[in-house]
Each structure stands twice: as C-alpha cells, then as structure tokens.
Image 1 (tube, rainbow, N blue to C red):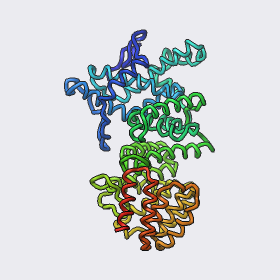
Image 2 (tube, rainbow, N blue to C red; image 1 turned 45 degrees about the vertical axis):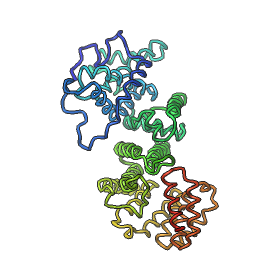
Image 3 (cartoon, rainbow, N blue to C red; image 1 turned 90 degrees about the vertical axis):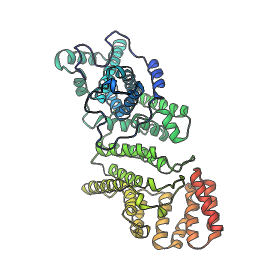
Image 4 (cartoon, rainbow, N blue to C red; image 1 turned 180 degrees about the horizontal axis):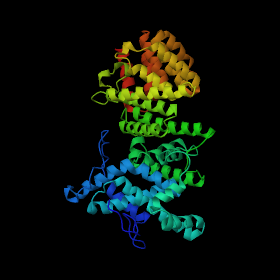
Length: 487
C-alpha cells in the first residue's frame, strides 16, 4: 500500500468531503452480499493475501474482486472489529465502523487493485473512522476534552503514526483484542441464543442469513437477537476487557459453552432435515483454535479444542451417500480424518499438561476429549477400551454431574459389563424430570433391550424415541431400527 500524503488517511475521503453514512453502507452491503459467495477456507499455509498487489486487469470481472474482498473480510473481520472496539468501547458501533470500511473497500478496490495487506488496509480505514467518531462525540458533548487533547498532542508532537500511538495509550494490561471480543460477545448478561448469534456474527464473520439458515429460524429473528444483544451490552456498560481474578473462570466457562453449543448443533442437528451441519462445526473449530492460541495456559480451552478436533474427524463417516446417519459402531473408521485425530490428541496432551502443572484434575471438556480419544485410538469397534471409558464417565459425573452424563455412563457400562447392567442404570433414570422429553433415553433403552433379545420391548422404545426426535434423519433411523426388530 502506498504511503499516503501527509494529512490524508489511506482509503478514506478527504476531510470535509463526502463520507459513507450508515444507511448507504447498509444499502451497498445488501447489494454486494448476494455476489459474495462464501469462500472455501484456504488450506493451511496458503497465502490468502498474495505476495503482490493484484493488477485489476488480471481480475476476470468486478464480481471476482468482490469475491476476493469477501474472502478477506471473512478472515479479517473479527480482528478489525476487535481492534476498533478497543477504541470505541462499544461492540455494536465497532461493527458498524468496520462495515463502513468494508463498503469503502468495495467501492475502491475494483478500480485501485487489492492492497498488499488488505487486512491492514481495512483495520486502518476502520480505526480512522473510529477516531472521526470520537472527535465528533467530543465536539458535541464536551465529554472527551482530555481525550481530544491527548489525540491532538499525539498527532502533532509525539508520534508520526497517530493510530498506533492511540492504540498504545488505550492498551490494557491483559490480553489481546480478539480475546476481549470473545469475552464481550459471550458475556453472561446475554441469553444463550444471543451469545451464539453474536459470536457467529462478530467472530465467525457469518452474515445474518447464514446464521438463520444454520439454526432454522427466520433472518429477522437472528437480526433482532443481534441488535438486542448489542443494545444490552451497551446499556449494561459491559467493559471491553478480559475478566480477571475470580471472575475469569466463570466467564471462560461461558465462552467455552457457546463454542461447544455451536459445534454440537453442527455435529448432531437438533431439528431439520439434515443429520449434520458441517459448516457450524467448521466455525466452532476455528473459534476453538483461536481460543487455544489466545489462552494457552487454560487446560479447558485445550480440552474443548481436542474434543472438537476428534469429533470432527468422524464427520465424513457419520452419514452414508444418501445423508442417512451412520452410528459410531457401524462407521468405516478408515474414513476418519487422521490429521484431525492427531491434532485432537496433541491438544488433549496439552490440556493434561496444563492441568498437571497447576496440580488440578481434568475439567469436563478435557474429560470428554479423553473419552473421544478412546474411540479414536481403537482401530476396530471391538478394540475399544470400555473399562477405561467407564472410568472416565465416573470422573465426568463427579466434575459435571447431570442426567445426560449418567445416561452415557449407562451405555458404557452396558458395553463393559453387559446390557443388563447398563439397562439397570438407564431404568433408574426413567423418572428423572430432566429427561422427560429426551429422545435418547428410550433410544438407549431400546438398544440395550435389543441386545438382551427383548425385541418387542426394544421396538416399542425405538418408536417412542422417534416420536420425540425433532431431526428428520434421526427419526427415520429410529423408525428403521423399530421396523427391523419386528421383521
């Protein structure tokens, strides 16, 4: 990117000239987003920015440039929003200013060419807009006179790079911009649904319509959740910072919960016609890897990353050619992704090392990753170490007790000690109100009864489970199992 002339910021109109307003930005983005196909994520090691400025003549069309801008935005948007949020201390405003910078790129890059470092271009343009906004607020309300003085002093006398100098002045002691954005988007003042939507929007870079399709709700519903979430954060005065001390553990748990919910919805969709939504798994994996890099001393961050890596390795084998579910014990393990398995096992080792260094036991995510690792290490279903799995479920029940954990433990006991032992545990859970509408309870009972040769009872349980299941593919599987026991 050429060095701008003194007094003019790169990529923005001259002072006093025409500026993109929020309404025009929204209209332009609505026009362009239909042309931005969601790009495939590049392979590791791919230089998405390219070593040189691209010649506009080399681009096949204006749409090709727009697609390139979409790819850059997908990769860089979270960093840009996080960097601007550090200046303005308002996530909603930061997203608006970042989108203003995107609109400027959509207008200028087709003619000027894509910059050498497009992420830095977007960051600079967005931060300059943030500084303009701060100046306007200062002039209108006279509430930021000291900030304005410091800004003018920095620009005129202290630092040649005004933006970098202001960044340094506003730095907190802890963390990174992205980590602050993660904790803000996942703040417990927000509902779980709002946290998920805001995280996918700000950190995943997903559009409102993409989030709506992923969760089978209307676009207006997602848009309202995001708007309300940003308003709640602003009205509650949630600080743009990493929590400290005793608050950190609880806030980190909220962050991990959101990422895990996103992954789980992709891994086993709760409703709809598809058994899986791999795009959500991809987003959760990406967020998990970012978290592991930002908080390397946290065992549970590595535990969640390990769990998702290992579970994601099975995605190709979890459906057949027609999209029908394939259960774990029936999967072709040669189709499991060995790279993801290795990454997951390495992350699990890091989780164990971090927990050991602090003299702590494994947390719930690391324990679930250890459970997944037992399956990943077994070349054949019959090689699975079910006794070790029972031990791990015992530990998980102590750390994070829940009826669902006990139900999964019943499955493991049924494999390790026989179906009668497992059925006794499952039957003990039948009266638990938390499992009253949980379709996997009759499904587990049906499987254990079938192994005991009680076919009619098993068929009835599978039919009951099918009546509770909201996912069409899962319902078809349960009905098929019920029919098979009657033949």
